[in-house]
Image (cartoon, rainbow, N blue to C red; front, side):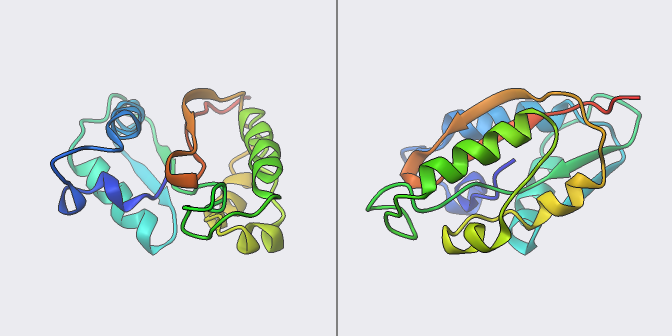
Length: 153
């Protein structure tokens, strides 16, 4: 789940540039259980609180909501401007997330403006099954994913 402020109503505008992303986030959060542990930085925690407040969670079992995002350097107009390493970084990170085994180079993530701190805590949740990917795009030069995992026994 990405921690993009544009999801919050306070950042709404006449034109909604993240409608598809917001819809994927709301759908994924409604899939969670009622007892949710949030793994996120401060901004991600704000996003998570909003999404949890505006959705009804579907199940009784405990769940985790992990808020992070890939690089913010995919284009010249991206917040961190263009970095040629961003696409490969996001491809590798996305692959590890899809496999349920998040693996990230924290130094490179920092250089590419990726918000991935919560992913280290997510590794403790393993084993995770393969992800269901609800959203995978880089609007505004920032890589966002919305994914769901179930634990494996």
